[in-house]
Length: 424
Image (cartoon, rainbow, N blue to C red):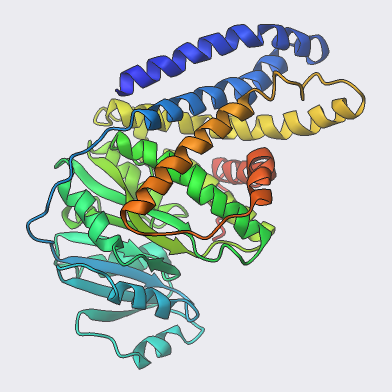
């Protein structure tokens, strides 16, 4: 199915090129062929290819037969904590409410908190399967690695200190991991927004998590090539975590770890029905800083892992990885295209913002509709409901979200390329 989907997307790309030839010539009359080809390629052609590839992949989603695990295996949950006094209690309560038959061992690693988190943890009535590990402040990866050394179960789950798990989250993510092919060593959980009603910025991110991030991971999971088993909620085979030495001390430690596993020829999945809710930035500036870290983390992973050069990386993962290379070029094209297009439009020239340039929007909306259908069907299966989302936020998400984040993403890419000082 992967090859057929890719061929369909490539065919649509060829048709798109034919449609856009005249538009390229028109732009070239004003700005030259280099800029014309660059803008059309990364504003229309590549996004269009991406939309078609994801749409067809979702349309012909691989149906997997439900399997019953005879015995739910014991698992250890690692929770790195740093100044999480306001959120850690809710996180632990959600773990206690898990409907899971195996034993759940919880290791809370306090990474030198200064806000009273450790005192709060010590004052709580924790069960015998919960351990508090005290550490000096050396960062998230160091905290995780310290706890990993003490893990005795065959499976390990990571959960952030501001993440709340749905009661079936552990059961569903473990079921996905244990029922997958032996080569599957990590499974990413499904993350939604916990504080969606706090501000308009969080409402925008709610759409991003339920459409953009969910849709991408859904497709990657179908091909057993989830490119990021995010630290907020993912499950791993402990043996493979120890085999690669755990998490590296870097900005995108979860990206690097996932790519290291893929580079060894392993596979990674996505448990769409293993729901967790996480806190997201409430202000535009904080969101920008987060996306700058994410962008920097991707470039950092390319530099550290050298993943495209490894022979063990399977074809599906390699293809999906190559799509990531276009992200910086798309972000730069957005920053050139939108302001320039609006200026020309104000002067009465619809050269850039015209009907042909907007053809990609219906494709995106069609993809959003299919993702929404898949998401709702999944939520029905686990009797989980999300609150209504803002329609205004959806409109802004579709039209402007990528544009307003592009500057921060570009700063992140450039910062890592030039080895600038890291800021978390």
